[in-house]
Amino acid sequence: MLKILHLSDIHMGGGFSHGRIDPQTGLNTRLLDFTAALERCIDRAIAEPVDLVLFGGDAFPDATPLPMVQEAFAQQFCRLAAANIPTVLLVGNHDQHAQGRGGASLCIYRTLGVPGFVVGDTLALHRLETNQGPVQVLTLPWLTRSTLLTKRQTEGMALAEVGALLLDRLQAALEGEIRRLDPDVPTILLAHLMSDRAQFGAERMLGVGKGFSIPLSTIARSEFDYVALGHVHKHQNLNASNEPPVVYPGSIERVDFSEENEDKGYVMVSIAPGKRGDRATTWEFCPLPARPFCTLRVDVSDCEDPLDKLLRAIDPDKITDAVVRLVYRVRAEQLHHIELAAVRDRLATAHTYSLQAELVSQLARPRLPDMDATNLDPLVALEAYLGERSDLRAIADDMLAAARDLLGYASPMIRVDLPESPEAASPELPASVESMESVGSGSPTSEAQPSERSDSGQLRLL
Image (tube, rainbow, N blue to C red; front, side, top):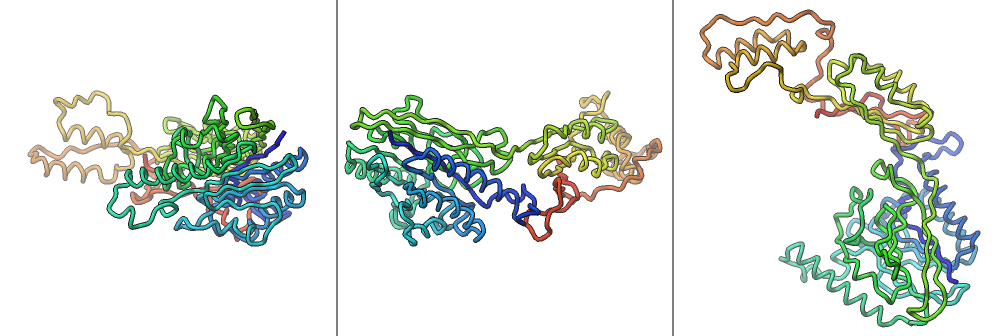
């Protein structure tokens, strides 16, 4: 029985903004989270032990990661070399340079000649020797137009035409490699791609639109015993019949809040011996204890005591060690009633947190009662509107005078008498203010780290 561990989309070194500085190591805690997740995968591969490890691409957020991030990645994968477990590292879109060429972050393993390591940066067939005999792995890295087409071939063509031509070239190239397969040897397609049947995860925001979708029928071929995919962060099997299984293991850690409700993990695969058509493939998704992400949404715009409602919406026990985002809708005149220090104290059990205040526009308020648009006098409507706007008290008379001039009214000026209110003393927000952000954590962070942010509060006009 051939045992395989399939993982993908590590993105080690990403998401630092959701972490803080670990006082013992001086490293961002999100780097430690990703390293711990990868370590658990490698631990399982060695303990099983498996006969082969397949990595589906996107090792880092980009092709030139920080040295400490590369070191953390290398320390774990080199354990496989020490255990004599063959490993195939596929190049994903984030492992390539901006021009879509090369796999700078992974090709070092081929250059150094790490025993048992294969770097899949081209469409190629690799034959590997394992403890259970030979296995064939067809690698299909992330494709761009320049991979199979020249600039002259696509000049003047529409985007859809380019995609169709690229797909034709890919199908022809795949067919050529498939005809070279040995039917007596277990065969795996390892590909980093977007299938037309896949459900999106966070990769929608990570550049998924820069490629093109490949039909499931192109890769779900009977010649393959297992199709190991990468790129989509949401775990899923695209082929319900499992003939063959076409599986995205998903990412091993949550990248951002778009993956808040997704399970993270890797896949264990078993392929029985035999000839093509007789080999049975089984697989199992193995969850990992990823860092929880939690979004709290609260509308306090209609509350007399917005601070109380905010504090009641935060359960310290439920957000312990989680990355928390508190999003609350609020009116401008309520802002001075919200003590951010009290909110931050309530969020202290979180791993890190951010506060996002969504400022409700006055224009979004419900229409004033007793106002009939069919016979409403414009000046009366303005008067009623100003009567609801204590923050415009100082200029109400001038606005009415200007309106009278515009409308050509000859009657005496109408004066709006507004009741005194403590809210009138609150400072006006500049109209140009679009957003400010507040981020905090349960413990101090280093000012030298990119995860540190100001503590001022985020505002967005709705």
